[in-house]
Image 1 (cartoon, rainbow, N blue to C red):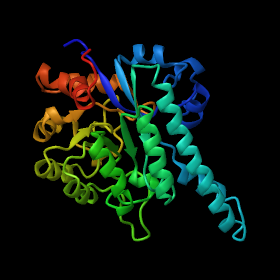
Image 2: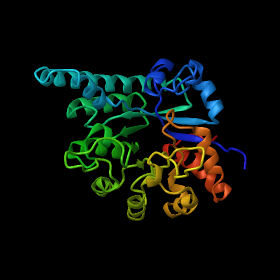
Image 3: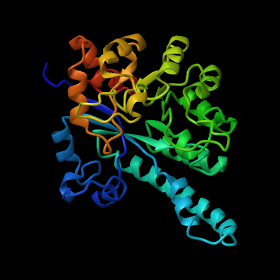
Image 4: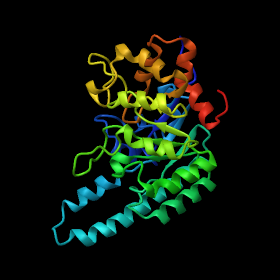
Length: 316
C-alpha cells in the first residue's frame, strides 16, 4: 500500500526553528532539519509525508517555574512564585494568540489552543477570556494536559471550559496516562479513569483522548465500551523492543504484535494518527501503521480520514 493522506493530530508546533531547537533538541541537526515551525513547515511536511497537522499548543510552564525557584532561597520563593505564575499565564495566552493568528494564513495547520486551569494557575476568568478570544479568532479545538499542568480533568473549575466547547461543537484533545506530575499521594493526574466524570457530565463534548496505546491502555478499552462518542489519538507508539521506534511508556504500551487486534477492539473509525512530533519520528510511525494486519480502508481511517471528518477538514 502506498502512503495515503496522512493527518498528524498531535504536533507541538512552535514559533521558530530556534525555539524548536531549545525545546526539542537533537544533537548534530542543522537548523533546516527542524520543521515543526513556520520556517521549516514546507520541507518538514514533504519529508515526513504529511498532508496536514493539528498544532497542539502547550508550554510546560510548571517545570519552568520549578527550575527557577530551585535557584532561589526559601525566603525569596513565595513572592517569586506568585510573580512567575502571572508571567507564565501571560506566556500561555500569548502563545494561544499567536497560533490562531498564524493559522489564518496557513491552511495545512489546525490550531488547538492550551486552555486549562493549571496553565492559567487557577485564574478562571483569564482562562475563559483567552478561550473566548481565540474561539473568535479561529481556534478549532483545545489542548489540556492534566499531568504537566497538575490538575485533575474532572476539576470543577474546568466545567465552564467543557460547557463552552460542548455548546460550540469544538473538540478537546487531552494528554492521558503517566506523563507529568502526581499528587503528594502519588495519584496520577492523567489516569484515564479520572476522565469518566467529564464524559458523564458532558455527553456531547467532542473529546480526543491522546496516547491510546500507552500506559493504562486497559482502562481505555473500558472507557471506549462505555462512551462510544470518545475518540483517541495513537501517539506514543507500540512496544517493539527491536523496532525503529521507542514507545513512550516502553513495555507498558500495547505490544506491536497485538496492535491490530487492539485498534479493532477500540474501533478503527475512532482512532487518529498522532505522534507527539517533533519529539517523535513521524515517517517511522506511518510505516508501522502501514505494516499492521488491517485493511487498506482501516489504515486510511486511522492515518487521515477520521481526523478530517472529526474537525470538518476538506477531503484530500
